[in-house]
Length: 89
Image (cartoon, rainbow, N blue to C red; front, side):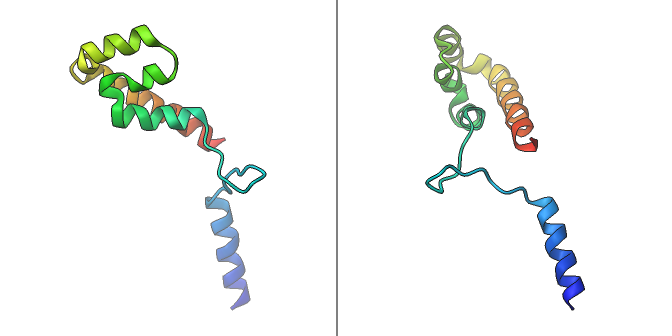
């Protein structure tokens, strides 16, 4: 019984990476994760570009409504990929 339990614990340890925490115990969220969330939720209105300090691109994205969804989808997919690179380590 202990061999099986040990094997399961080791297997779960390989799958789940421990989350990074700061000194107070809170989970550290990288800026790219925030950009990814903003891009999916409010990217149609350029919120992701405004957050990154790209004001001109944010205004352009706002006026065109994410270039009718194409620009929004491309940005959201790109930021999701970049956030995944950080999570993979």
